[in-house]
Length: 145
Image (spheres, rainbow, N blue to C red):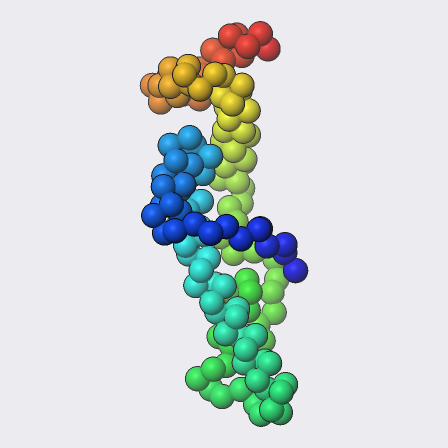
């Protein structure tokens, strides 16, 4: 079972402020926020399915049709055999391009965090105008790498 982080007592306004600061500081991306929000439905579905199983185990009753699990944790209908790759994973050239882009982004982030906060904007401007490769070369020359 995954560990839960220590609970913090934030108001909704404070939580919103933290999210916007994290976005501004590029500690979290809008895509990650979307992933968390879409994951809420998945988590609700898992909890409901577990409740159905617990009720059936406690009372010995069979789950009713309206409460029966509709999908497993990977999104497959019950009883369907899972074969091959997981859904949503790219293959072939697209997977290679995705991997290269992710590696490039990792190098960019690793270097940008070594640059003082006041000077980061000039490198992000280079990345937007000329590409991440140009920004990486510039940062490596400044950092002596």
